[in-house]
Length: 195
Image (cartoon, rainbow, N blue to C red; front, side):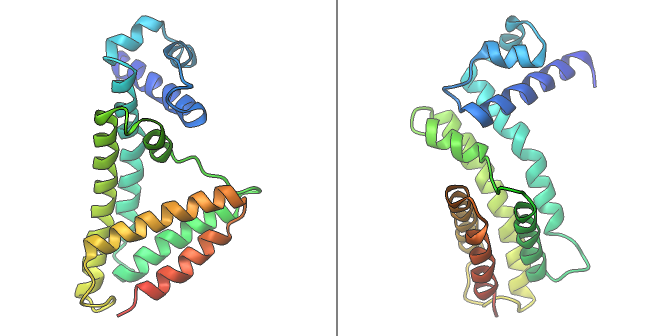
């Protein structure tokens, strides 16, 4: 990685970490650049504004997560239905192993705070959610072709519903401080994904 890419990546890593903890409005450019160990002027060399930074931070944060999601949903030795169930079971296991289950949803926090105020942030978040849903919908379409889920299901709509239910379960887990909502999610997902 060259120096320019390294500096930009450090700013993105630092700023994303701060925005995860403090939100968009609670994060200042000075704090981002200080955490990255670069002068404040460097921020504006790589990003037009804080809004532009937030959009790029969303892509920086979620691109590798969507790639991992796609990898998990394309494991050839498992059936498509089992790939979906295993992916979510593994996520539940991750949270179950935490002493006090918690989750910071960068896209959720940023949308709650800025989607109405900033159309570009809203569009960026929507595009990321659509990419993630498409990955899930593709796997669900495979499951449908294999006769593992009902033929009358619409894979894209089903993917959207599953994603929204998962986000809701994460929110309840955070509010309740226990993983019960995630266990209910898995039980319902197993029932939903039937032929």
